[in-house]
Length: 488
Image (cartoon, rainbow, N blue to C red; front, side, top):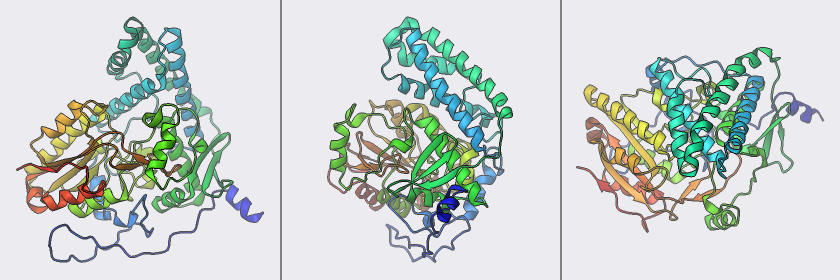
């Protein structure tokens, strides 16, 4: 009884990881053996797994350099309370429902209305982030609910997405959605002021013991025991109670943005050892294997290891604390994620040297500005004569969500030094909801890998055939994978 009470009172966590020495890095080229890196304060003693390798993370000096040079400076944003995050999540759910109701009102029978709302919402998140960065801020003041600014772009996007269904009805729908969003956003600060703060989330094991339930009042979330341990290793706070609150807010934030319907607590924790078994199960469900997934799929451990060994990349530019590989990363929400190692959005960073891995969501609206940001950073690196490398993993299908415009932007840059393509159905991704679901996904699309480098990096960290072959094999071996194309 005492143990159970302790769990309910503030989140008794699994025992900490035992210490483990850092694995050696094996280079693709014949080079003198380098001295073992000294583990920094931000690195964890957690052993490597198929989901993370925290001991291989970027060193503290490099992370501090990124923080110092980012837009908004090194300071962190105020983290939300559990009461505020629950209130915010309820407002987003209400806005989703308002969109569905407006579709009915205007006779727009879009069976996938949630998908259109997500596109509209994510486009606003991008616009709001860009506006904040232009004003010298790390992130917008309201992270989830659309404010009035930037709605012209959102209206155009929604009208374009739905015009083929009901051209004459979409414009009024967009106008009504704009008004509903603004109303809820303006009401949120008033709701925050009326909240009674001081509550805390609790942690308790699930019935099968494979997961942990995070609860606050009527809200219940689920995370696998393994990933809760990872979050504990990432956690930079001081108290156990603070950890439970931070984990709850982080998980609820991403559920609010990326999931529809039931919470992640309803998802199965079944582990499929064979990708073919998972494919058959998915094909038997409504929508088949192409059903929409809320979270972006993650590269496998083999791919991360190959990119790290080939180019020294120990930092992800598009991740979350829930699916990150390393102990420092870029994420969309620095207010909830900073305590777990986030340095903010990739678009707020200004690195002038180093090596970085990018695996963004496969949508043009994100990849196109990402390509522009890479161009800007590499031009600055050439100007200052520093070595800067980016390894980009995106969808390789010109006709997909990550279409010809996105691929053209990456293929057309003068900084592209090497590229390769992996055919669909012949390589895998880890399920984006790996924190609650350990499925392995067969990739439904081609995957393209681009290596972009500054002039100095091409000499110091050359994209050799051996390195590209190492990455090629990490995606699933030599069979079925196209040869890497190297730029001179």
